[in-house]
Image 1 (cartoon, rainbow, N blue to C red):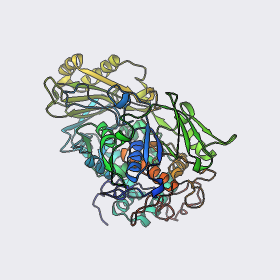
Image 2: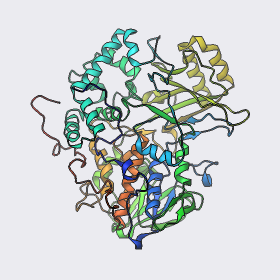
Image 3: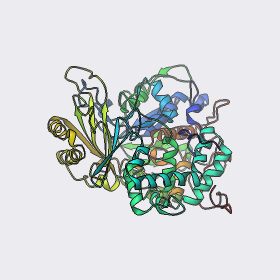
Image 4: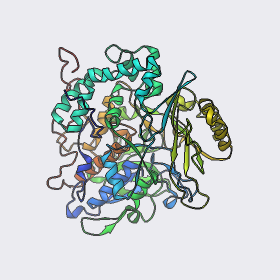
Length: 591
């Protein structure tokens, strides 16, 4: 048996289409008939998925018109590009960037890295927990005691109960066949992957992460061992604040991160949004253009009403908060989908009908978003070098996770180069400070970090008194309901239906039973299989772009089928979650 740890791979296990290869080089999502070139298409939301959809539609010959609700005085026309790609540089002279949303990206994210390379973005290793060689030290602080480690296995010699917990966790992943799924994904062994992943879905779709940790059919840990593992973490964000999410979410998280290396963009992840916006491409007619040029320098403001014709040939009328309205051949909606219940009035032009079918509405209404909070200090120098603070702190106290980042020499005189993320929290931990102001947050987090790191407590307190701070609680942002969704057990059917929406009835029958085949396409993180990872959100934009092109009479380029073109291939068609499409349990249980 091959015991070599399999590499991380961002091929989506539920729909293993290679999006990066699909648009590599000069390849396009598809081609339009001559009569459809220049067709206007509305793209609502200028986050990663919306920008990717608009960019690829532009490359294929459409005229994508962007709408964005987020405001920023420094953004084009006062609009902020990027969505969860939200970087803040407090002073132009700073090299330091505060990442308020997406902040770390696995090297497995090939689609993201292709776009970043196109736009001239540079990557530096991210100081992830237990990243030996990159992170000087990860301090695990639990029950008032500190355990410094370079690798997570260093904790085995320092804490016996943790050693037992971590060992049983790894043994459980092997026993249920997860590591073989990793190998199948990495090897593109799609037939074997489908079979093995179906078994994990069948056995664990109804399980929470916590149940897997505790149940004898999983890791079989005691309550205390589960607590220890959940505090130390088993990967980025797989902490005890995620105990209630579906175990399938954890499997997907590990597939795209375990065995890989995390990176951060030197320019800040908002640079990716700026790249999509400004980068010039050659249209099918040979004309050089950009989203910035097509949109006359600025996205249009927030959308208030979408009027969707039942006949897809009649398109969608988009009404925006400036009182203007325009009919488009198609519309791609990418914000968090709960906004369709609260901020955007979604109407059909046919009385008594809805632009979404009952199953899609059920999925939209059932989405589970996660509160998320971050607080950071921007400093002239990385004063923590050589101290126990120099790296990552994981704790059961209020901050939960703290990170240190050095962006290198400042851009200008008086500029700053260092960022101390005092706290990065999720779920109930984020809610503890949701109503606290910036000053209180800084004071509370510094208080706890000073107790964890007494060797640097005096300096930490002094720098915190003079440094500029920034914070965010994503659940308090007006156009968000949390940083992203994470499914709970029983919600897998919702995710499958949302992902399938772009297929409409292009195979001869609706991919989602009862779904009307109109010109509205849903995309964004909510429609991806693995939430929170930018690569998958970008891929959702490519799905929608494929759907729009097909609606307009387009087709794929020769030798380059798109995601919808392989939909009916049994190696790709996503599993359904009503038992009809999942192989029966083998006599020996999971393999």
